[in-house]
Amino acid sequence: MPDEKFAHNMRPAGYFVVSPKKLALMSFFSLGLYWWFCFHRHWVHQRCATGDRIWPLARAFFLIFYLYPLIRRLDRDLVRAGLGQRWSPAALFLLYLAVMICQIGSGLMVDAIDPLWFLPFAIGAYALLIWVEVKLQQAANLLAGDPQGAQNSRMSWANWIWMTPGLLLWGVVVLSITVSLSLTLLLAVISWFQ
Image (tube, rainbow, N blue to C red; front, side, top):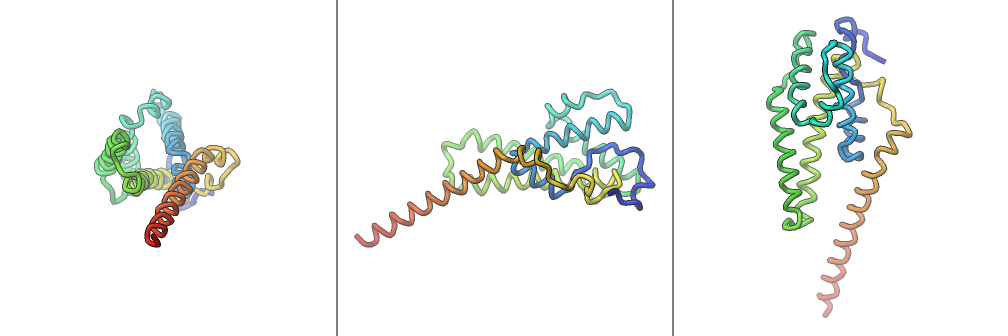
């Protein structure tokens, strides 16, 4: 339920509302697809609230080109509503962009990188992206008068379907690492006794 103390200052919700916890969980286990969906929904809400002639699907498809304009809109609307945040739109965007470039670059070199080194890097980079996404979502929720995103905090069966590929992938990754480390340990013990 929207927070009444914020709602009176707001125009119609120009941003998609979702709980930060749900966003983080869904983004992680949907392998980023849920963030793409949220980004699209933000632009749909912007089009409805402002009347701007924008194509949300095109903006979502070219997310990296339209992320900064969305961050700027969030910042502008926060200032107008007297809810200024301590953040730099440019710094958030540049962090997101730098992490994306590093992920793409490391993905191209994955055969040359030791998987035990690559995995912590990949998870850390992914966590940074999700952190930026959550910061943006918190601002959007604040502007929509629902700082906690309570109106969209429950997990539906559709959410679980979205997360199934990621749950399976992360399960395989954990299983692979466990088996690999177990075999390495077993071989070390065997060689020690010989």
